[in-house]
Image (cartoon, rainbow, N blue to C red; front, side, top):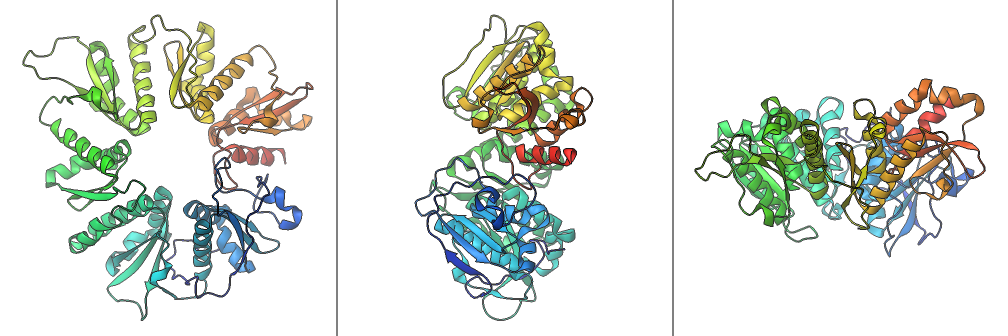
Amino acid sequence: PALSLLHLAVWRCPHLGSRAEVRPMGRDSRSPSRGKRGGSRSRSRGRKDSRSPSRGGGKRKPDDYGVDTMKITDDDAAFILGKGGKTKEKIARVSEAEIELFERDLILELRGSKLQRRRAKKYAEGVMAQRTGPVTITEDYDDGDLTMLQVPQEAVGFVTGRAGNFLRTIEEEWCTLMFFCEVGGGGRQKDYEKLAIFGSVRGRRGAELKVLSAVETKVPGYYGRIKDEVISRDKGRDESGTWGTDTMTFQDDELSYALGKQGGTRKKLEKSSGAIVQYVGQTALFSGTRTERKRAKEYIKWLFDQLEGPLYVEDWDKRDDCTVVEVPGDCIGYITGARRAALGAMEEEWGVLMFFMNKTDGGGKVRGASEKLIIFGPQRARRGAELKVMSGVETKNPGTFTRGVRDKTSSEKGFDTDRLVFKDDELSYALGKEGTTRKKLEGAAGAILQYVGHVAFIAGTLRERTRCREFINWLLAQRRGSVTIRDASRRDDATEMHIPDNCKGWVTGNRGSELRRMETETGTYMFMALDERGEERLIIFCHDAGSKSAPKGRMAAERLLDEMIQ
């Protein structure tokens, strides 16, 4: 099998390598369209139909958008493609270029801005160079996308993991490419290996700190020797110009609390603040913009303050990073759960930080009085968690949030919330067994969909809210018979598939069980609908088109259906 990106191989410098021939083609006016099935198709089958953009299709092309091609060998093609096309997808994600491999002609096509194409070519040559042996990387290799980190020899195996699994996990989490390599002239150093990390400033920083955390576990005290270099790296090198790193030192008993069970507390601090939060030994490092770092440090201070007693955030109503929900006193235990399990699950699901606020005014708490639950995090995540809390309170105390509530449709293009009031018989159908139908509609629409009593709250952008409302209406219409959808071919969130009559029962399964299984697996919404001529076809709905190797999205659902029909 082809070597993984994560094998400890040495890169061939693209400026010295001669195997890849690059031919600039300038601007290309043709519209790429996604290939329908399987791996990369040959150019001879028709270039237009075979091209599958690796990035989303709606973005405006840069002024220097163009196409480069690389002539490669058959062996190189296997390395570039990787298992299930995952290596090609990874190169495309990190470089932000569109990449297509024409296997029959052995041509790799790179599309994007000049910098995106240059990076994609560099990464592709790095993958191919793994087959040829040690080559030196020089200073001009850095296009503003490279971090070099020295890893002590005794920690290299620990950082790599079994069959490269630990590095692969970091690559996936932070959207980076990582290789051990040689730098400059001369042979390898005995005491250290150089780890090259490619990606954005944020991605490289997240990956670097994760590696450092692992190294410090294996070689205690190593971070202390290089901390000045680590803290000052990439300072001010983001769009805001305020990127940097702050630190905080923990005592022994504080570290385990700040880390949480399986790192849960650290992760929620990271997601809610937007900063990179990583613990290296006894030191907490916060990397991000000035605002993100400030929030992360505030949140961790409040976490520790809660150990001393009740906490109240002054001037919370003037902050733009929090939402407060009034929770009735008889619902507090239900929302919190045993040993905070219910609240912790919501924090993990939405990537927020939540705690009850109590003002210590000397008067004591009134029995049964409501309490303020404060939610910290990005707007969308806060709204998702808030609606989940409202749903729980409404279950325990009906009418708290829905008394007198009516339908509402907002015309706001940005983030907002719509409401849809269900009739009694509609709610259970739209909810599904253990909420599976609600979750399916939410995932396929890309919106937040939560049922608070008999009211559906739909939060998201205008397109997301409109799509979700359509999905709900079609779902309810299916109870009365066949649904007619005339404009599916003009939608950017739908894929039509004509199923042979003798396969329809096989594809849908008993009472639609097979379709439901595929929907859950791929995060889509699928059903048989009539077109304007009254002919039946299957429509796959999802805001995410997917890709040739991704397990989610419309393309993934289409592959599963193809396999079933064949």
